[in-house]
Length: 265
Image (tube, rainbow, N blue to C red; front, side, top):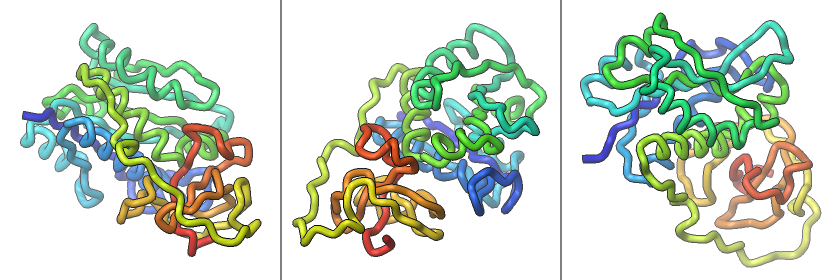
């Protein structure tokens, strides 16, 4: 029987805990991270439940307990009145070998994609409801700061990168060799048309609430994006193009923010 991972993205309410990115808030950017994480975990043989937005913390913990989750994972981003504050933090019921093992297995994979490669912090927070109520071991994630511009621009709003890294860490904890299911069938570029600078590699594209997909074939978007992005390679695959959020990330492996429909450019 496959192990069940219960993912609980933040549920503070629409518009609460606004971040540095325009028209975004904590619940809006943590759910795509959970969705990407779930996809990768499922590709590696886990069962996954993502808590519904309609569920409060009590309902989420009850569901996690009833379904006998092997790991309960709240997913949040942090905030500070000091805009320069930034770090990753994983919180647990107590400081013990058991919880340190979870931290030691999961944190490195997320640290590896965190800008600046800052070391993650371990914290004991037995007072938090989603730490002391689940029967399963709980790993409460604070994935960067939505009050820090660098975290918002280069980390939090890249759900494919963050969710995948979190899934890798969870696989590592359970002794599962991570397999990237998205690479089983390589994408092939669509038949090229006449050159158009509008769609060339590195071209800036301004988007307004456009759907962002995790792959070229996903039917359901991970989130919607607004702002200026850049075409990662200029290739059109199944009617979609890869984008990245910084000019310096164009063409750099592992720095794809996601896929958008060509018609939305």
